[in-house]
Image 1 (cartoon, rainbow, N blue to C red):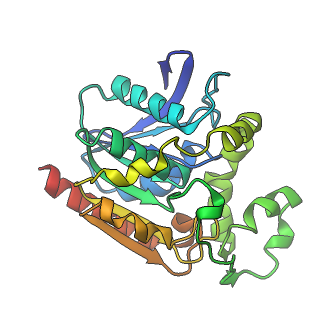
Image 2: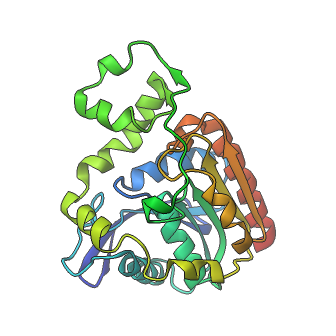
Length: 274
């Protein structure tokens, strides 16, 4: 489906019916990253309408020349919600950079958001502010990397903590198609000109009361896990889980725990929502 926001035709898909959940992917992939990990949670769970979109410059959503920073992307997301979910309350889930944007939405529109799910969320846009562990490989299937092309290996090897045929299959299905479709010129421009919110510190000034789940990978060498502890004061009803044997692809490295913890978060949201 297409939602026209000014001169930006935003591509999105909707599954199910009921309470809305807006899912925002990270920096580079597209909506398939989020459908790949969230849809199994809802296979036997009715009552939720899942909205998966492609951010500008990623997937099937083009980017206009004027869009240059994360504050503008956040504004576009607000307009998208107003059109697709007019006057409705909703939950938001974000992975990596998508978690950064989700936190921005929760700070800007707290009265509309009934719960938030942060998956390997970017906390600090500036890399020099992140506390990062060294990349570690905790499981490696012999010979697997030799079956990949150099380009595939360059995407998989630096990020995968669990390097098996199954994790490679899921990354190839959920992550790589989006990376291949991204607008690299825009990504470079966003990274250099406006990746961080103009007032990132303002996120700490808003206390968000609804149920929150924060999932971090103990071996996540992209955004780390330690910074997630710093944001707990913002979220009085947050569960923070740091999973061992999980990197920046936590949902791929630890799918069973991801699904169980997400289901428990949904239970808390439903009780609070009424």
